[in-house]
Length: 232
Image (cartoon, rainbow, N blue to C red; front, side):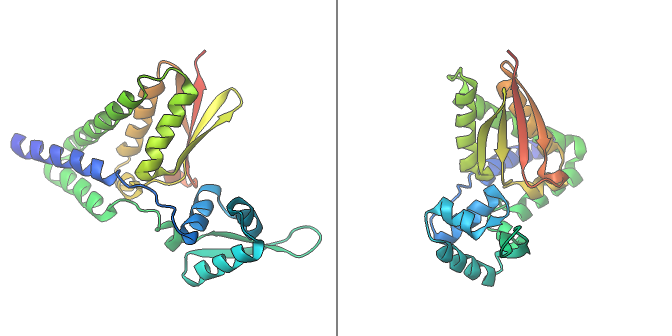
């Protein structure tokens, strides 16, 4: 059993690193529109045109093409006086363009560990994964003393891993926002993964700030949001 457990733990940690190595590509016009809708939520063609520096008609033509491909959809909303406007959003198929890294393999691995070795062994795998990821982030942030610099570095790392992460000032506090979760399928079958993410963030900022998750994708929110409040 010990030998099996060692092999499973090693495989799980290596697999988790590979699964989080997704780097968001924003290279085509379609990618840019989909990313705007993913990070900014439902919006009008004119708003997206302004962000992308193109004409409203050009944006509308791109969106109609994406609609034909089943990636976006539109609803008509009243706009006070004048013509109603169309508000565009991602479809389920459009959301799948932002990978949930090898989700079938991940879910199978989680279920296999739980079935063969039991829930305690699965918890140990999650803890080992959390520790490895936490150590990597800690090493990258350890030389920084300013809280905003740490948030910027963490957002850069998480964004490269597929979380579409950003941070912003919120009064005297900060918000750390992840618009996408590349390991969502795994988190759905193993809630401890999300708890481990929160533990990781609290470890990173524990001496400088409190960290609470105020929005959670798996609880029905459109994204995960962490509120980070400086301790002094």
